Image 1 (tube, rainbow over the protein chains, first blue to last red):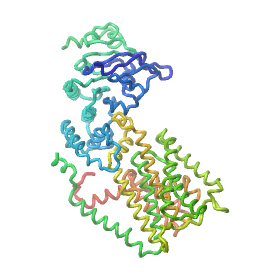
Image 2 (image 1 turned 30 degrees about the vertical axis):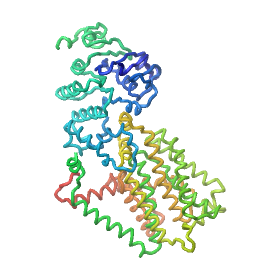
Image 3 (image 1 turned 180 degrees about the vertical axis):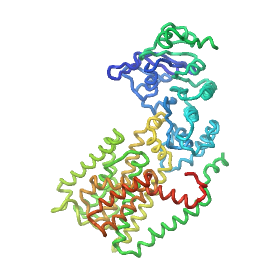
Length: 255
Length: 336
């Protein structure tokens, strides 16, 4: 079954074709990486899939449902979760508040006005469990801005997971993290249940080649290669455009 | 889960008796004392309560949602104008008719204006709400039906009647009416602020994009918050109409819109009782300023504002709360 299908997707910013006629589909449970040089349109593609932008042309199908015109919050209810390139946690709120807001977001009682947020014992208990899993329970009353960058990253990814998504969009999860934190994040994603589909955009090749079962290479908004890590690795155009003609590191053979 | 829950929710024991004492003092000051004061001072305290209610409601949009509205007086004044028109044209001063109609009118206008104003955010929201407020101001200024002949605005209002023959309100019982309504409204706002809805508003203030990806329909939240905030403006406006005996276009205009914003900033934006403290400061400083140098009130207000921004940027209310914390926990046993 297809988790996500993108058909002839294009978006123009003025004269710039940020994403141009992109089509691909992802099976349920696959880990797909999207790579490409800066400005290739990777984040724009994510914004289209998640609904922050609406495409100039093309369709997006999410589990066979046309979501092209749905706003972001509706897509969240359908099961999309996203971690942003720049951490989007609510910096001036505490860790616990962030967790509670995340958990309440897809619950029907999120509009309740006359019941205290902490009276929802079930959600609160879930928040406690999640925070203990991330190892941030001790810091629940810390403002998020006082956490280290790595902790924020981890919290954001875990919060994405506790929305119980069907599709997880990770925009540069490794950005600004140390080697150990990257390994940590790779571990989290590897241990995900197999029915969660994951899309990753990243520049960190350890992350990409360590996780992805399939890689799409974008260049100036167009797909120039699509295949297994080995195929992409040996693709001549990818070598030329993405990794430079002369020096290319053979990641596939490292493993 | 039970033990953890208690651990998470437990508050220091000391805080409890402190709040009991604080509430006790508050009850005495606002509940009993006014009965023994002169009717002029009673009036000033009534005015304080009305503006406290107005700015606590305004704070839902300004503080929790983080959208600066400069047009809340339009809804405040609309409530007052409904009272005034009912009295002038139909000779109805029944509370049970005037109050619901006034609040409904304010809500209705907000439901329309909200759709226009919420298309934008930030400083543009301020400009649009300002423009919409001035729109009502000029309507009230120019429509003959809304003016007592020979003046701008409607005069000759009275305290409401309750349809109980033979007994009419005197200023002190009106004061208690205002007190009860204000306390109920602030309690409701407290409920809302602590609910999932209220938390979502704060979340939207901190990062609307993230809230959308979490599944919140942020526009709807903003719209609801705006309308809820205006309901309280309407309540305050109705009470103000009864209190002030005169309602004029200025009560719809930017001068009045500025007051709750100023009260929120001075008292503490985004806190429940900060605006109350801001309202108290402004109303009572105005009282003394009008005794000493009546013509220099704007200067005094400006000075108060600048002093707050310089020395208690988070608001006097927050500053006082921190000071209180420091005094009651001298060894720094409580964080920040």
